[in-house]
Image 1 (cartoon, rainbow, N blue to C red):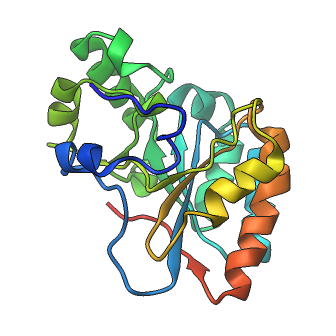
Image 2 (image 1 turned 180 degrees about the vertical axis):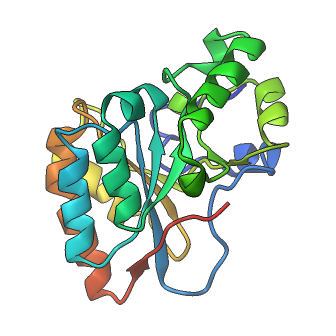
Length: 214
């Protein structure tokens, strides 16, 4: 199991990266590329706005979707795919791996995967909350590329100002960074402030935004 302390969450420590070396934390590249990821959608209140912002900057991203949200909002999910973004598995019910028996956790992951249309199927997985038992990780990595992060925006944290969330990203993201945002109601206020500024800031510095591949 692993957990990040409040000050450690933005940039995971090297020790954890070594322990979970089979996960993807960052893309090794010298190119000026960033990998934006969005967790917990799709939802109609936030995801379409995110798609519009990405389109303005010709940016592609990876959306780690909750299966139950896909079932409720299939048109929003279809629009993610239609616009050329990549989708990944975030369990069906946003389960906390620490609090869930392995069999239930793995079944819930497969339940999410089963509702991806075959043409959109990508074998990418991110654990909700970043929490999974090592036994769950070992089982999942046989089938999925487990994706964690290099930079966590912490856009969901109401205790942070929007400027602090922005600084979490622009103060830490470099070539190949996998950055976590959330297309969720909890993160919406911060996201609407931060995402346009991140897209503009890095675009002006010559960066492009690419999706992850399995």
